[in-house]
Image (cartoon, rainbow, N blue to C red; front, top):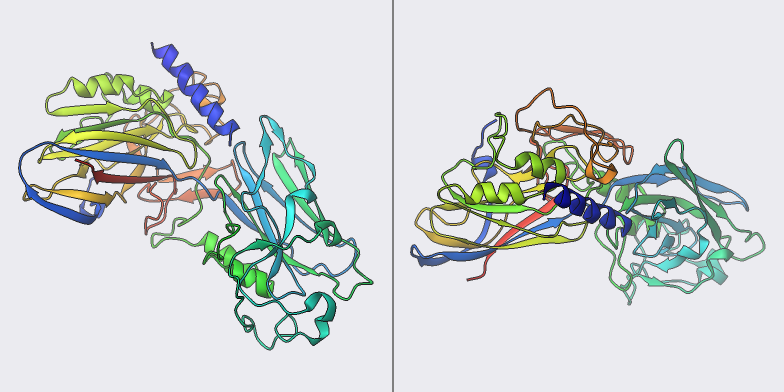
Amino acid sequence: MFRKMKNRILSIAVLALMSLTSCSSDDDAAVINTNGNNNDQSRTFRLTLRNAINYLNVKTIGDGPLTTTGAYHEVSFKATKGTYLSFANMFAQSNDWFFGTNSQGIKLWDGDTPRTGDISNAVKVWDAGSEQDENFLTDFPNTLYTAPNQSSPDSGPADSDTSVRDTGRNILNYLSAYLSYDAATKYFTLKIVKANRETLHNPGFITPGILVVHTQDNALFEAGAPLKANGLEALAEDGSPMAIYQWFKKEGNAGAPLRLSSSMSVLSPAVAYVHQGEQSPLFTKGETAVATSGLKELAEDGDPNVAYNYLNGLENVTAFKSDNGAAPGEYISFEVQARPGYRLNFATMFVSSNDWFISNNQQGIELFNEDGTVKTEFTINKNYLYDSGTEEDQTVGLGNGQPMNGNASVGTDNDTTVRRVTALEDVQFGKGTISSAAGVTQKYEERGGYNLIEVTVEEIN
């Protein structure tokens, strides 16, 4: 059974990538609303674990505008399987046009093969929909709000059509774009080359730009919708990538990334459980995992079955399990039943590791208020990345002892205690060491963190 489950988890993880010490009040859930019904009857809740991994790295492109034929921007970046590339550069003599990929981005891998060669046909000329267009293509000298003719940034009248849209222009009239890949260093290189427009009214300068590696659609903008409030407007109108770069790089109040995800991973099939008391029956932070608890099997191999059976064998504990894992953008959902006095918790393997898992704090998620009234809908902001202490840690996403890479047997951990992961080295995307003293995994958490998951609970009956 164990070997069969391990193979199933490996298949889920590979397919997903190919398609693509104490607790405190600081760990409380953020309650949205409550139900006034006060009784001891069992209630049904839906727990949703969504893989929120998206923005994996961001870089600026170029130092100055491309003004002559053959001039080029070049930038190198790392990206693993299952990721996409999006970039944007301003069409400098325009009100708000920019050169960029489709809103879905460019898929960087086809199985084990990296995308290389001419990618010009994946680039378009977009109208950002933020400023009214003047006759900049044929009468640029007489424009009033087209850089550099405008008196100040962001000074032109608003566009009557606020949607980001394809202008239909032939991209080859402006630029060519190419991707190359170095298998030794594992770096892609993007090269953007200015086309010959020397004899035309508008030379079509190409400003410095922004590049983002991501997993989900619409990383920079959504075609047919207004611009996001992410700084792309400043790039499209004024040619500066700094506002959008800083938006991606913003840190939470504890100094950890607020939007960038630490790494690329799927989440394994999960176990959820309700229990009495303020101590999780599955693990205790600072102590070695109970050998029969199933934490080892879940945290090393993504197998929730042993933990599910163990938990259901305990008094005042009811466990539930999922059959599916979750790639970025996908989710795992449970319907769980609980009575007043019970708390909810979960565990899912962070598959691009040797023995790490994501769970709430040891106290669990309070489903009821002190007076027994039910909490009907709330987001769980305090979820953490834990090291189970059962296996030696290798580089995230690259170790041969990880399910994605063969799940070979490796040595035991020198520290056998269950503990939060407070720092990890991002070799997958080259961001260096990412520190999160609390080990926060929840997306949108004000402290910042690893930005791996969204967890929500709602009462459904």
